[in-house]
Length: 156
Length: 156
DNA sequence: CGCGAAATCACCCGAAAGCATGACGCGCAT
DNA sequence: ATGCGCGTCATGCTTTCGGGTGATTTCGCG
Figure (cartoon, each protein chain N blue to C red):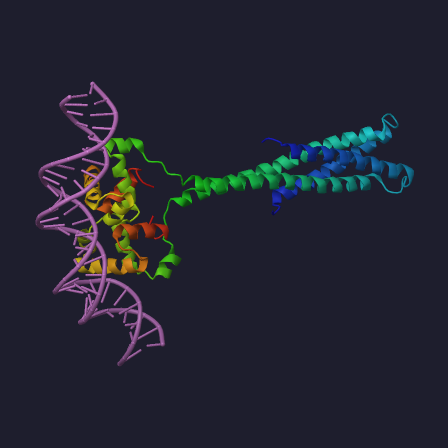
């Protein structure tokens, strides 16, 4: 729980304010109202004032923290949108860039022929890529590969 | 910003402690150390003590709030999980409950044979269901059906 | 009661997908 | 320069998918 500059400033001001207040009360007591009121009354007064300031300080600190938290939340939500492949899982499974490309196209619902056309390669090439992909993902079907890849964070 | 019972108790204790401290200082000053030290020194002492307590109070309140916030964040993430089918899209496409079931199994990567085994029906039945499903989803392949169904909010 | 929607099952057939295997070229690091 | 990873392509073969068509049963609704 780090104390930032603003909180520090508030605390210093709080202390100075308290000192000034005490001095003020002393002066008043000594010069104009000697023996007029008992010490406990002054003590209670000072305590009340400080309690008020303490509450204010506490709330202020709390409010500041809350704002920071909210900001963090706001930042987090959009970070959920843009998708990023899980590079570590990708490396762990030994999936090559081309295979990942095939995987994405499979997830989009394209057929072997369509993928071949889009990537300007032969259907056989697409087939070998997907075969190796299934091996690495330990999948037996396209649909299963998609499901597993989703779990592994390889596709959105 | 509600103040709970514990915070209220802390504040009261804080006030009482302040009062006692002030009274104590007064007594010391009046009885044993009269004029020994100037008023500002006592003021500073009291201010310092109260500052410390104020900081403690503030941090305590802050800590409580922080915990609440963290809990809220933790709760939010899993709240993204519970999935609900888009009933309107389901009705619009005229997809029957059984077909939706098949759709879910397809998305899980099961083969026709596996689906038949799990649902205790013949493979042919699964095939007819999926055929009708593809018609309604305007899909030509399982993978495409999954992709479309995801867009329509029929599956997570 | 009859009608229609939903679910079930069957058979056939062509297309697509998947498996196994081998091969070639390219770049990169040992 | 030799081996290795990657991408590319091919051939043959088996399995799975998907389309088409038809049939039966069950159930609710008018």
